[in-house]
Image (cartoon, rainbow, N blue to C red):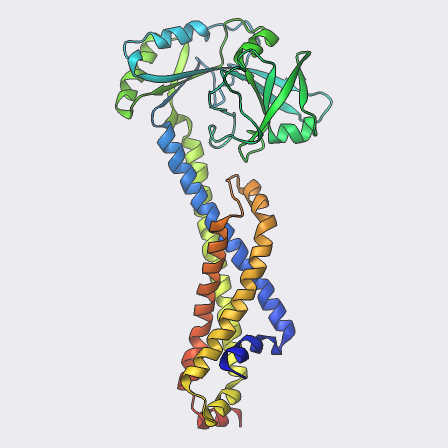
Length: 391
């Protein structure tokens, strides 16, 4: 039997131990890959968010609180923050530096037939970002089925609903009633956050026709053409909109989000380090135990002419074979657990090429660490010493 064949079959001399070890390696390697991906996804989300919000300014009704602008969803009749506020913002001296202005109007909705079924109805112009309230990154909503609002939907009774809203309220139906009017559901979005996934977005013209809010607005988002102009435009908006609106730069509005994502990234990194340590310890311990159990066998092989090279190949085959089985198990586990971990951590995770590569890389590292001790011991061990140890 060749050294490679012996290496691959050695772990199964003790089948119970082999099953336990492979199961542990599968769990550790699979979750290690997911934790590393969560760390990277959190950091990418922070970078993406910061890159996007550096030129974003948020306007909300003076005295409203929270990034959701609660206070802007008061009963109709509060008219300090209106379309006139929007026109004032468009008329500031630096208006030429405004790359984009998006206005939103909100209305809370409670479904009395379901426990804690609260959502927010949001009117916006087709093409504006689906800015969900109360999530970590309020611009990361992405369409998961159907389509987004598009040109031509300005006056249509169509809606984009959150994934949680669809699951809890629609349950497969593609139509909902808002203030007695039917709206066709044309798309479903997700933010990987339950609160953020519990909204309904409709065209702002259809919103006004359905809920009659008059000129009232709830939020205005101003995108500046460059970072260099943000400070000047903020000052001009504050001067023009005094007592009408609070002017908040996006970095201020998402400071909590940055902290939350940063904490998540650090926690995921610590979890990854811990899992890596566990996987390394398991692999090394098993290989050390295997080596000590077969000291006499190694000595006999050397006595009948086996070279150090053959001994090294045998142990490398054993370590890599065991890790390969762990990698296969990790791939099987990672597939169903990716969406679960994504939902728990609130960051987008998918079973993709990166997860596969992370699992394979982790398995190779574990195998390399696990084979280090037996390779060194096998090369040093002489047949005479082997017989003396087991005599």
